[in-house]
Image 1 (cartoon, one colour):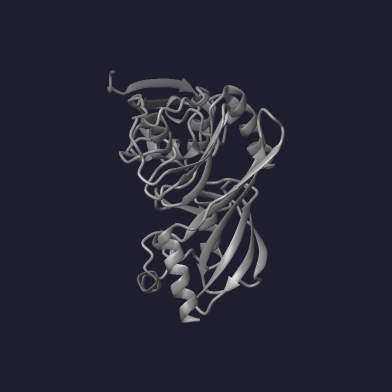
Image 2 (image 1 turned 60 degrees about the horizontal axis):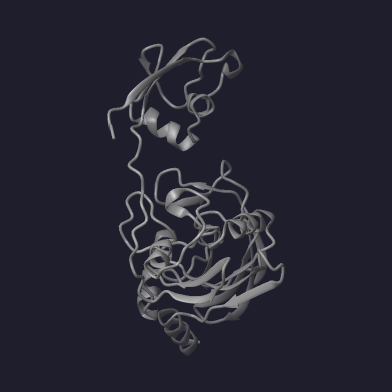
Length: 312
């Protein structure tokens, strides 16, 4: 596969007169705004032959020259056993797994570790062929550092129906999070848009330019240093719980990426964010009956909870 960038040139339509360059690029070439901004910052975009900034306003009829990024090599699923991944439920249409930490939902550029789809393939499971090649059958995801329940579609029917249930927000997906301090109020909703962090590519943030994001939380138990929350999501943004809890100044214990106290994390023996997908319920895609599953806390999270309780 060729990796030589190709230059494309197009005139700015009159209808985009006065738009910011990054917004115009996104409209004209189908990029995301983030990708458009990256190309401009990398000097890969010119207006009438001159260098440009992402905030420049375009003029109708001006020529945009873009060095198109080379196509990425396809990401392939590698069948590899996943230590500690437990099959909670399995039938002809869906398999529900209890995902350990350190495991991605599916392959992605730059990730060389184990994946749920790779683990299922190694165990002989045939899953739906719907979806992008590297994430076939995946109807929702968990962060690499978040453990718990995840459903994967085995049939094409299941993929279609489950994706629709997630879009319509009829899936009962709940998490438990141990957060620093005590949110006020102890029961509430965070309704704040989430988008890419303005200065850290690997992080997300509450930002006016982000996508609508809603998190409901309810205190299960309060300790001296932390609170155990039951959390239900209306939306499924990347790092949503972690970002929303950090926005309240009550980050998940151990979540150093989003401002958690490293001293508390060490004291409780936590080496990742204390966040676990404890419950998953949905209408069975073929039978129409309601099914639900629960997952116990992994050993590291259970030990940390015992320690914070003992301190109280």
